[in-house]
Image (cartoon, rainbow, N blue to C red):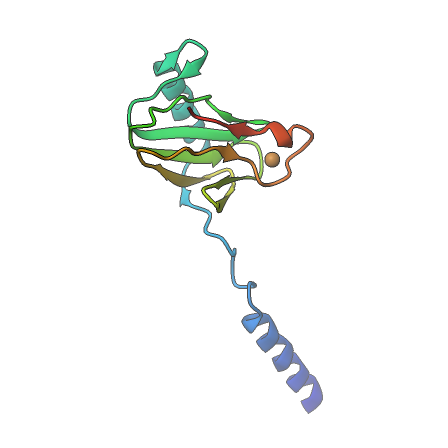
Length: 140
Ligand SMILES: [Cu+2]
C-alpha cells in the first residue's frame, strides 16, 4: 500500500513539475470575441479599400489569418508606425516576423509593432494545408 502511495505521489510530482505541462509555451495574445473581430476587420477593409489593396492610416490595423492568406492585403507606408492586430479565423496558424514566431488561434489577437524603416513580411509558420506555402503578406 505504501508503495502505491509513493508511486502515485511521485507521478503527481512529475506531472506538476514537468516543464511545459503547466500551460502553453507561447502567449496566445489578447482574448477577444472572434465574430466581433472578424466583423470589425471586414468594415475596416471596406473603409480603407484603395483599388486592389487596402491602405490604412497609421495606427491599429486588424488582420485575419486564414486559408491561405493574411487578409486584407494591406499596403503600408514604410515611414509610418502601425500596430498589426492579427487573429486566426479558421484554425491554427502562426506568423513569423522579424525572427519572432507568434501562434495565431481564433479568439486571440497578437500584436505586431511596425516602426518606420521596418521591411516586414508576414509568413505563416504553421502548416495549415496545401496552400500554406503561399500564405504570406508583403505589406509594401
Ligand atoms: Cu500555414
